[in-house]
Image 1: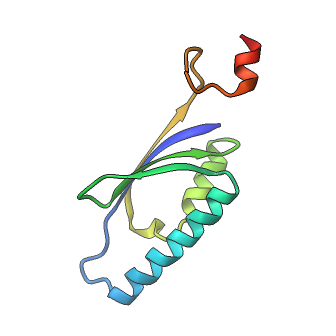
Image 2: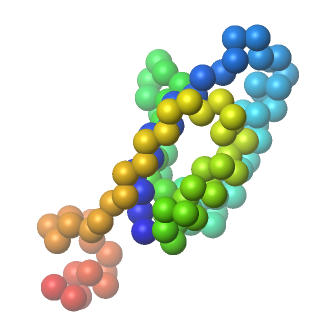
Image 3: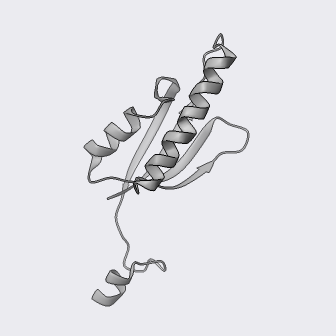
Length: 102
């Protein structure tokens, strides 16, 4: 199942710069692993903001919840919006199995 996820970050004002650097490094490494596992499909950042949009894949909402909780930056995520996505019959980028079924 695919999900469109919007995450906004709010770093602590008094956050130790070394901790912020470590969390950022850990977050990127963890995201790379999630991409390799097929959970993180695409990711876009919002220019000028600590915010991103992504296409995530999980078996269900409960698995996605666990994935989001596993993110190193999770304690600084202050607003997360999750929208479950369903395939549309006129999607021009339909997987081959959907095209064959039409």
